[in-house]
Image (tube, rainbow, N blue to C red; front, side, top):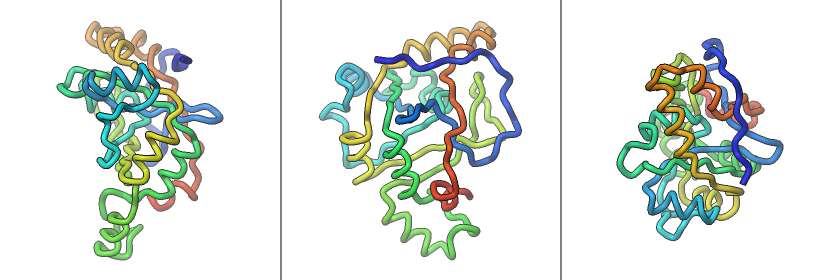
Length: 210
């Protein structure tokens, strides 16, 4: 299985657009991250697909930001999130999810009123949150990171159609975390997956910018 590409150390940019998707991506795939207990994470990485214990009828959240995933799972040290997975999904699937998503909160500039937003949220198979991006110390940055929630049809498509490959990146998380604890931030940054702006135009994001 192909290893994620890495880049050298760089200073975090604070002039990024507020709603920009940054991800490790190729011409055909986008890499997102999730963390599970070993009973799900290990067989998923071994087999390249989610096991029967993975519930397709539950909302599942995917994150293109490696460092936001580290913030969420505590570098893989939180209970039930000890196995960190990098999931390569098709670009077509990722785009479908964005087109069929609704913001997880009401935004007056996007929705006529709260009632119409609630109706849209109930119908949408996907939802989007924009949460503060994180630096290597997991402190919030002044720009946002995409969190994409998948339910019902979207969750089934994610597991059964979109997933191309699944890798266990827990050792990478542990290695980067160890360097951060030693205050070796340049060395830690050099190991991060290369997350570049994802080319998402208004057709994918106009209805998701709060």
